[in-house]
Amino acid sequence: MTLTASCRNLIKLNRFIWSVPIAIGVFRLLSPNASCRTSTIATGEEASDAKRAGYARVIGVVPSSGSPGEGTRGVEPGRAGGAMDHRGEGEAAAAAAESMTPPPPNFIVGIGGSAGGLPAYVSFLEALSIHTGMAFVIVYHFPPTAKSQLANILSKHTKMPVLDVSTAMHIQADHVYVCPPNSDIFIEGNTFRVATPRVKGNTQVDVLFSSLALAMGHRAIGIIFSGYCGDGAEGCRVIKAKGGTNFAQDQSAEVSSMPQSAQQTGCVDFVLSPEKIAERLLKLAKGDVL
Image (cartoon, rainbow, N blue to C red; front, side, top):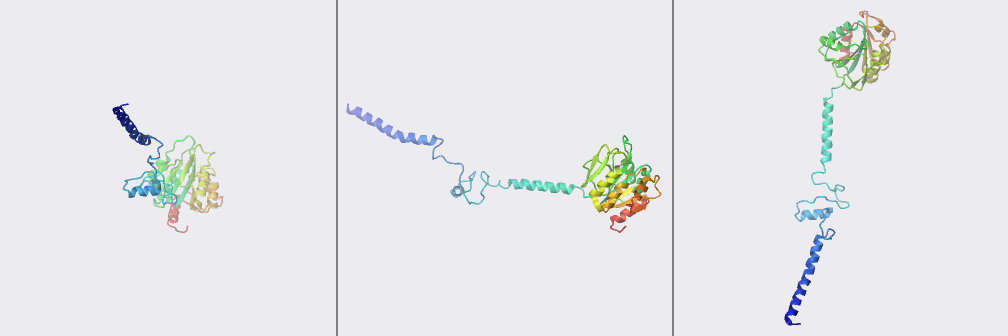
């Protein structure tokens, strides 16, 4: 072998020797399991080290054992309070909705009547103050298929709002509510529930008074105006048993059956004309002893 050939072989061997470390380095850089690959999750101490080294941010900090803020893995700075912020917004919305709910009346007055009851309703409302803080619920014995205009008629005799009752309607002070035909109405909390058709015959006053007594206790008031049959008598018993107050129309009633049936229970506190009943309610609203 000549000297020139030997030199060439040495040069080739030298190139090969230098290329091996370079190849190994490239392999390590490209390998997905290489130990030198930088993790995107650091312990709490590493995060602090990164900050001290001038890194702008470390995302996905895993606190080391016993470090402050444990359990906040994967939460970026400024985001940990997000859930609390949303909860605070929900509570604020609930408080705003509650503030918009009308305050309940101090008393709820159930009023029952049938034949001859309309003139009594009109006389009562015309004599009644519109600022008693009470709510008034009127039941009238309509035929099951009738279409009632009672709310419209009564609205002409008072400045209080007069509304047909519907389910989930809130009961507000200084409002008048009228039961729909062929329906029973119940008082649940501070709202109405309407059941159609009615349970049986002319018992709507008893149903209302009994529900009223359970809902309002001593702040329940029952009034029986002119009408046939004895509807309302049993309801007066329930109101009285709960500490409430009952009124019945006097001899001014065009039909005396309903007022007299109520009086015969021994649970009626006052027998008065519609106008005088209105006066007594105003005294009650002012806190006077009846």
